[in-house]
Image (cartoon, rainbow, N blue to C red):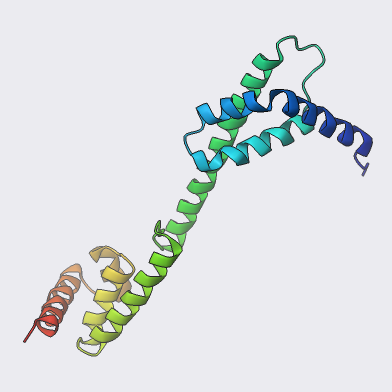
Length: 177
């Protein structure tokens, strides 16, 4: 395995730095005008620098701004596709694990989980095991009635009955006296 020529890499970094020194404002303006997610502007700006290090501007380019505009646009398209592919993989993996993705902030998600745990702890003693299991599968893990029936090895009508009776018991328990 041959090691990369470090003098060439250092030379490319110098060339990219020169381009950014001269056209940095133009590069930033193009990225700013094309990127919808404003939090990603600096990431794309830095990634574009690295792409110029990997693939410097050819010597025969006459319109450097035109070349930079096209290269920036291509990098933004590539970055958008990478992010979309990543989220598609995350969603598929989430479906595989049968866990819904929580789009809330970590603090709020933690509070919701904590409150849900307390709520299910309170109702566990008030319901039969079948009612509690149906409630937990349906409302805690967001399964459909059909999925709950399959997991509990009962008919869908039984699950509906467990949920109905369980909800009535919970309403009576929570009703002010």
